[in-house]
Length: 223
Image (cartoon, rainbow, N blue to C red):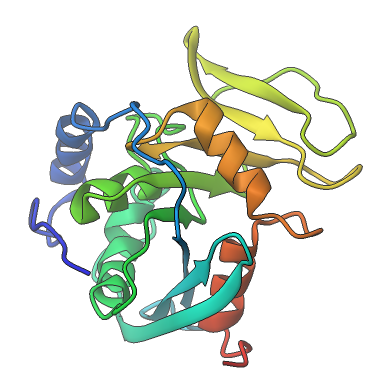
């Protein structure tokens, strides 16, 4: 899988924010997802010292959602832990793993935010631009914005609003379990993003893509 070199990763926090603001203007909210054959999930796990990390990408075949490829990369983190700038810390290793794939995914679901981000460029959007691939952000917690209460039933959702702008949705994927937070990454609209997250859920709170990627970075995925 090829990546487009959009910028240097060794930057200051001020430069990183400027890059986010510039790239956010390039994010497409027009869906280019039709019927994907392969859907990928990505995740990263940091070591105890917070300097080394493991990045992983898993590729699942749709609609069976059976695992077809896993790539794992270990390396040193080159950016400090700063909320709102996590993609500068996590994306390089994830991109390195993605570049080793032989099965090219039609869609990537990231364990993180898309445009539901203060500068509208979270990890999913960042990866989508670098890989020129449709991406969806599916986070376990909300970063910015607010939403109204949603129903307990799977499939219930409420839009996340920030400064009167819809930036994502809180989506219930399992009965009476905390929602996940879905947002546009790149080359997808919100309605489509919500649909594909639900399609990838197999009775767990998290989509199978994220669940398996998390197992992979922890060394707990049997291949």
